[in-house]
Image: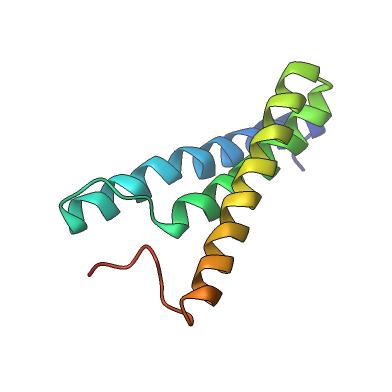
Length: 99
C-alpha cells in the first residue's frame, strides 16, 4: 500500500497535470481556429486542477498556496458561469465555437 505522503505527492502532481493541461487545450484550440481563443475546456481544466491543488495545499497547510488557489477557483467558476449565462442569452449557442 502507498503511504500517505506518497499518495499526497501523486495528488499534487495530478492537480498540476490538470492545471497545465489547460494551456495545451488552449494552444490546440487556437491552432484549429488560426487565432488566439480560450476554449471552455480551459476553464474546466482550471477548476479541476485548481480544486485538486487546493486540496493538496490544505494538506500541506500552506496559506500562500491556499489563498492563491481559492482566489483562482472563484475566478474560474465565475468565468464558467458567465459562459453559461451568455449561452442562455444566445439561445444555447457556443460562444467559443469556430465560425
